[in-house]
Length: 191
Image (cartoon, rainbow, N blue to C red):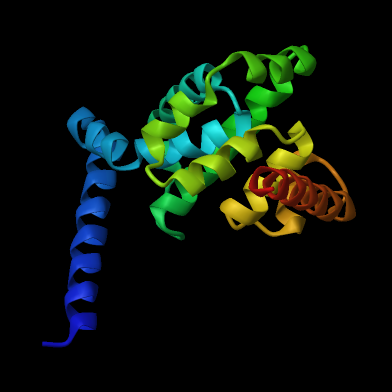
């Protein structure tokens, strides 16, 4: 039996099932929306946590993403994958939260006070990924945001520049800064 046909059939079932859930949620079906929440919560939380570097903020913003989703799900037209559209809603919600932060220095210092390992262990089993995630959390805010959006989430620098209201060159510069800081930090750990 051809494995690609089995995988394609599974993907088609998942896509059809998700399309049905989306349609039902657009009509106000709370059970369908709850199932969408269950299917996507972990990925949305991981994005929020990586971008915010704060467990409590990530939990709050993740919930806000799903509130926004409930309000905006009728806007989803199926022109892209639902996960891609939801990712965009989540990213914009996180960025909106960051813009509302009055004192970003307080938020940076709160990173040192929290136990990053506790949040990481909920999402990651591999110890090398845990170490890398911990290092990412310690990056300066702009470098961390650009790094996560580019390296982890796959956005292009042009898109990141628009989202963060910066020049494309600044996005590239922040990405290379983040890579350099991560490389330095990880090489110190291995020494």
